[in-house]
Image 1 (spheres, rainbow, N blue to C red):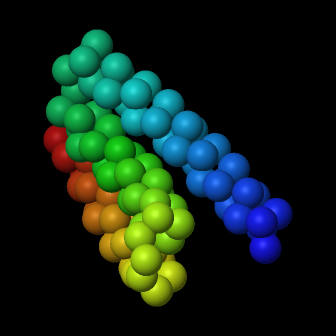
Image 2 (cartoon, one colour):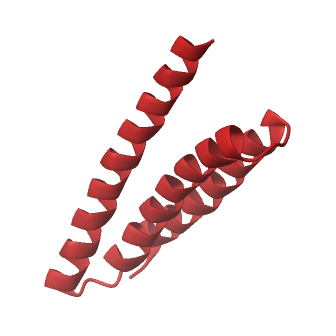
Amino acid sequence: MTHITSTIVAIKTTTFIIGALITYFAWKAYRRTQADALQPLAIGFGVVTVGAMLAGVVDHLVPVNGTYALMTDSALTAVGFAIILYSLYAE
């Protein structure tokens, strides 16, 4: 079980690092170009990234059923994707 837990932590950490880099570069592009669509794009990626990380924290550190971690991840992913979708249609 420890091997699986370590693997999950490594995958979540990798997801967080890549998501943080995507968020950073999207925000940097927004600041450089002032293109209105890039701001919600960066925020959307940030929400998805935070959701993935928060789900890992809930799953490993909070003494609740693992279903809550899955619900946290799914809810924040849906919100983040909705923000990203909005950014693709923003003028």
